[in-house]
Amino acid sequence: MERRTIGATALSVGAVGLGCMPMNWAYSASRQRGDESVRAVHRALDLGACLLDTADMYGPFTNELLLGRVLKERRSDAFVSTKVGLLVGDQHIVANGRPGYVRRACDASLRRLQTDVIDLYQLHRADPEVPVEETWGAMAELVRAGKVRALGLCAVGARSARRPGARLHDATIRQLERVQQVFPVSAVEAELSVWSPEALRTLLPWCVSRGVGFLAAMPLGNGFLTGTLTPGQGFEPEDLRARHPRFTAEMMAANQPIVAGLRRIAARHGDGVTPAQVALAWVLAQGRHVVAVPGTKQERWVTQNARASALRLSAQDLAEVRELPAAQGSWD
Image (cartoon, rainbow, N blue to C red):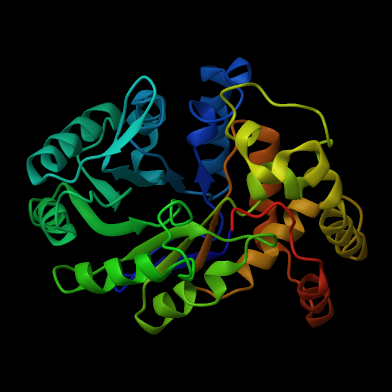
């Protein structure tokens, strides 16, 4: 697989990584099977999709424990990214950016992951009660202590944190400017896909101009861009898509032209090329600083996603993607 670098420290990873959240969190609970997920992680590492993206809140904790089963055997094959800063309760999620908590959470993640160092430690959300510089300073201490190699900031929750009238990533960029004064940012993780391209406007250019890596979260649109979901199919109550405005039966039907366009492009590239691979290739075409992090828990999708790194879209392909209709049912 093509290799790409993250941040000024030039950390090398495969162009396509593996988002591990669906294995234990936020998607259909009835389809979560530990052994199957372990096989998927092994398959990703076999194919060079070495960036394993997790967080202590996924489960909570069970996703890191699952990855630890693999890392115990194959730590040298993996690039481990995990996150800190969110606590999960019975009915709520709250931010905790207190320095003492950050230090304890890192030690706990190291134990669960069965490793002595985290390659990329990301701040999942800033705590509104704690200056972000204090949280980031505690994370920087972990780098100096040898427990963490590099720091990143996760902007996946940017939609919910917006002020009326503000652009999507304005608040994230303000946070990045502040923490960059404390310790270098190596990577930013944010949503980027054919149907959610907002990061191209301001956030991705900010990263490019400063040599910061960009981890594209949800590059397959929570599964919609794969073309495998049927309008009106329904989702289990705990599945995040059950509450997503783009996953109502009406909006899924309305957004089918996006998938149809990806299918047309895939057909030009030969038998076996899928809409999902075109969607991932589009993300990778946004620059060599971009790493796609699709989430899955099945070996077959890991294999399909990894092979997208070899797909090169033409100028015609990219122009057709630009002309696809905007997604309906936006968070905006």
